Image 1 (spheres, rainbow, N blue to C red):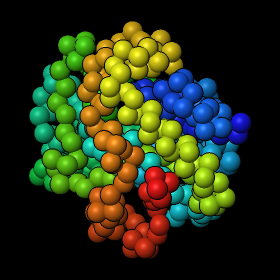
Image 2 (image 1 turned 135 degrees about the vertical axis):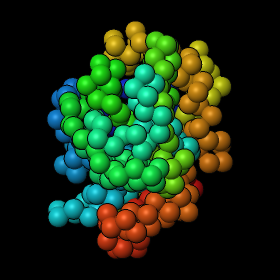
Image 3 (image 1 turned 60 degrees about the horizontal axis):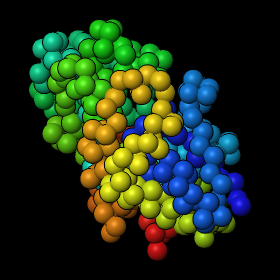
Amino acid sequence: MIKLKLALDWTPNVNHIGFLIAKDLRFYHQEGIDLEILNPKDDNYAMTPGKKLELDMADFAIAPFETAISLNNKANQVDAIAIYAILQKDLSCIASLKSSNITSPSLLDAKTYASYKARYEDHIVKEMIKNDGGEGDLNIVYPDKLGIWNTLLNGQADATWIFDNWEGIEASGKNIELNKFTLDDFNIPYGYSPIVLTKKENLIKHKALYSNFVKSTKKGFLFAQDNLQESTRILKRYLTDYDLENIDLEKSISFTTPHFGTELNCGIMRKERVSNFLEWLVNKGLEDKVILEQRLFTNELFD
């Protein structure tokens, strides 16, 4: 049995369900893999998943696609590569309370935005505002990462970035009405999020093992599509008390699973979608055109 470590991007939630199922139902075990899942709650997000990958504290890291770009282009370059896309559709959005009367991004000018300080995040939100006719003049604050959603609910921020299949489900269950703005609706060609990253050197060295990891992961995500009750039972075991109390898990899973893809494309990243995002970053002056030539993702582990 070979031990592998996966660093989560957030406390366990519906986006992680395939990994949790594959671990719980021993899909990894059947391939000789003993998977340890690293929860960011354990260090209150003191270290990002990308940093854990960089320092070899994890074999795989869950992160937005931006992390692949960041790691490959930082001063101490990390030869990282995206190997698995969890969602085939971007289920994230910028959200504000409906009671705030922020009915479009342009109305976020001079408002307070709670940021995760993710690469490009602040620029993306400003561009969204500009694309809606605003100035992109935001007051950006950086609260404790694991408490950002609550800054919106508590009125400490006017908007933040959420996953509609998680925080959106919580808001719906509490009859909290949100105004939600997707990047696609405001002409921003976003990449895949979240994805699984690894180091290229390890991918080459352990290709058969990593391929088994990916195939077991895919099996876990596809299992969730047809087994709602069992998937709910498994997810419950990993959640924080807060999430157990506040989120309708069956509703969240049912909302999410169609976007994992099919047997044909589950986990796969399309070159066109990645290229559109990279070209947008270059055109906006956020990255050098060298990123257009870099090998930032691969689907080879599905072969």
